[in-house]
Image (cartoon, rainbow, N blue to C red; front, side, top):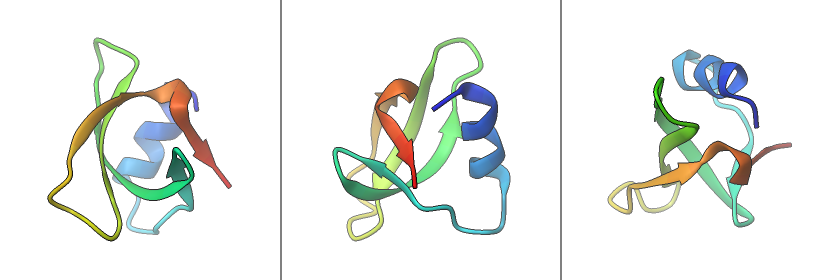
Length: 59
């Protein structure tokens, strides 16, 4: 996923269908300095992690 699209998704009030390792996730924020995003699985909000944008897939 490109950085601009990830930023749009993270700022949108509409939920996008995005996955990480085939798991539906929520994008909390996107790093302006690095190509990473702070995410968590929709079914486990406590499991936050920082991942490369290239590993996120929008369906």
